[in-house]
Amino acid sequence: MQEIEVKYRVDDLAALEDALTQRGALLSAPSHQDDQAYAEDGWTYADSKIGRSFARLRTQQGRHLFTVKRPVDNAMACLEHETTVADRE
Image: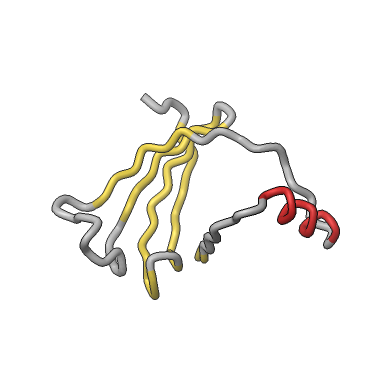
């Protein structure tokens, strides 16, 4: 699976939600995610992410998901592999 993530700063959330709803988007209720992230040994935020592997363990609504991402073209376009984990501990 390849994921392309896009992030935007939103100054008026209510106006954005209204515009999306008018265009037929169905928004779910907010959900809580508990994430633990891992990077390669020696990597720092000053370094490029491209070609590096990153892992995340996420718990959401009692489900644990282990994901490995590797940015290929830029920090937001990643090759991604994931699997469920029975016991987060």
